Length: 321
Image (cartoon, rainbow, N blue to C red):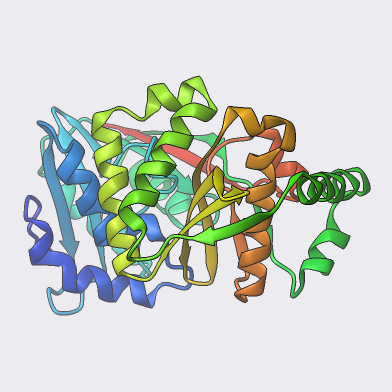
């Protein structure tokens, strides 16, 4: 089996990578070259970039976007900025071929995080490596709550638990009574200022978000926002009350799904539940745009379940030689 470019760069594999993404039944934004490249530019550090193309160069079985740090082989990207990881493939032959390709490489541990619950990787990597006598462990890593979107907002409200539906309607009435509000979408012309405003609101809303958004991560956010806007995938929504911004959500629309990536709000607007309500209005906007799934991404924050989410999961696979 052909194995191409274990330590090659992004430009060499981007065309095949894009073609493989397009063939997948459920394409994932976090598996795209643009997301991986943006992360690598900010966080690559001392690790070796390992972009392995498995199979014929013109029509590969798949691509393994990974890094080799010492003797540990990992998916490219940390779990703080990638909610999902996986191999880029739709061919079951990929996994045995990948193992053949990696046999001669100097790794002792393969640590694969954030693998989606429905991925064949969860079955295939343990099968392949246990057959070769390696130790393999699989564990649930986190939840990624999500919601199948109905055809209308009224249908969505009707599907909520009675208490949650009542509370959401009550909070929306209170917001309406508090003043004149609107939800605004960032445009090409407003993007730079709106992205800076989003960072400000994100820091203000919670201490852990302020600690999270250091200079490197802020640089990543700035670049990924610009690149997603250029690709037509960005949904940076701002809630304004009497012309003043009080909340913002950063989301992406990809392959019929909306991914709610992060958010922030003015602490002075906490009594209006501005952060929660903008997320609900983000769901409403996704429904009106005909999207089919709303992914709240990693974490079990209570608001996700108040807005109707149900748990899915991501998993960690560790292989030891």
